[in-house]
Amino acid sequence: MDEIVGFYDELAATYESDRFENSYGKFIDEQERKILHRLLTHSEERILDMPCGSGRFLNFAQIGIDGSKEMVRISSAKFPNKHIFQADAENTGLEDHSIDTIISFHFFMHLDEVKVKRILQECERILKPKGRIIFDIPSAKRRKLIQYKRTNWHGGFSLNNEAVRELNPNFEIRQNFGILFVPIHRIPKRIRPLFRTIDRILSNSFLKEYSSYQIFELVKK
Ligand SMILES: C[S@@+](CC[C@H](N)C(=O)[O-])C[C@H]1O[C@@H](n2cnc3c(N)ncnc32)[C@H](O)[C@@H]1O
Image (cartoon, rainbow, N blue to C red; front, side):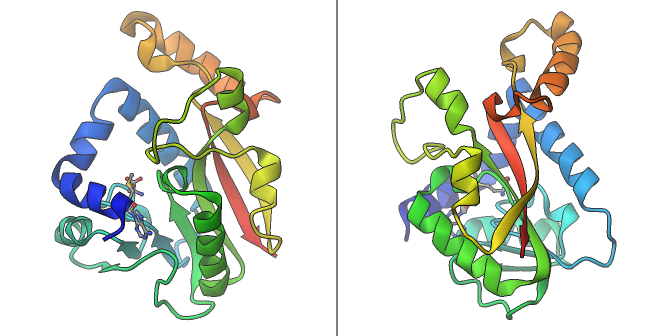
């Protein structure tokens, strides 16, 4: 089994409570959900959550895939009426041009450019014309600024806007959103609401490429 899938397979049962129940995780989860609510407005859309993990965002999708058997077991138990199965994102087995939108969170950051490019080719194959992929990625500009040192694969990959554009010439960036300009989780709780507002403004200003993460909406040309 692939190292990354093996890692998540082992912690599948506690993945969501470990990552998204502390103040940092809650903030990120909340921002991501807001953006998904804003972008996913067509009820007839066929949406794939890839990888769906333990189902954090499966309420937005009808189909979920994940490389981890354990993640698939947990998410299938939570959403028994959805089509959820184990597959590599590079080779989903889904039909050509069968999906309107793919959502892909906390995923590309663990991979490398070669793997992300291969996955985008698979996305291109399964998406309908003008289909889109919505994904998050740490900001390479921010990381350069703070002199981030990569330790291993975990969250180790980042991109700037130009590099996102170059991943696949058959996609174009429709919009991008910044997340976590200010380190909200390090700010005392009582003044956090003020900083949330500041964060929202800065993350969506001309400085958004310097937020910790960006969410991209790429559209198939
Ligand atoms: C950090 S979790 C993210 C899950 C979910 N998208 C979320 O945001 O909560 C990363 C997931 O990617 C899955 N994964 C890693 N490599 C994969 C691959 N090549 N194909 C499919 N799934 C993969 C892991 O099993 C894990 O469930």
